[in-house]
Length: 263
Image (cartoon, rainbow, N blue to C red):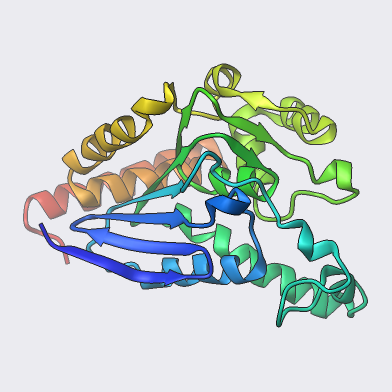
């Protein structure tokens, strides 16, 4: 196997690549992998740094918690060293504030690219921004001690790191509203039952279960997985007849490729 350690290792994020599998690890367990703008920039850089050979990306957090959410230091007048505090950001113009939030969101957008399948391996706390980071991935395997919660509304904020769309898609509008508005915990059994988690396992089985899922995803031809993922993602916004058309076009491409007739 070809192993490339520390393709990226900065600001609480480490990216390693082994053959067709990349692993993105949150590396600040002492703070329960709390998130910051620097971490978000590092996550976005990890997405840009993926070699073209990567087919599966596994996201995990070191320690007992996946991510306990945004570091509360962001709400202090001092903020983070070298960063404007959120209080300072709020004083900016609408355009400036929109641009900053859009930059933060980049850390959460690349996980659903059609050329990869992303898996979040989630244990312990996955709160706020941590919950949204898990939702950014295509699939979620969770340990029995997982605690999902969307606490933004209780702080007078909204979930703005791309989590609302996948949450509604997975559990429906009414349940998504209830989860966000109450800020309650969603534990492993419920997460699996309502579709937040693809699989819930004992904590000691988390790594092995993710490896098994990764191997199963790699067993199918890459181009077929890419086309299938694109079809499924597009199905949410397409009308039924448009989806039928998309299926026909995708299958034609696959048949021509298999027959050696692709352009």
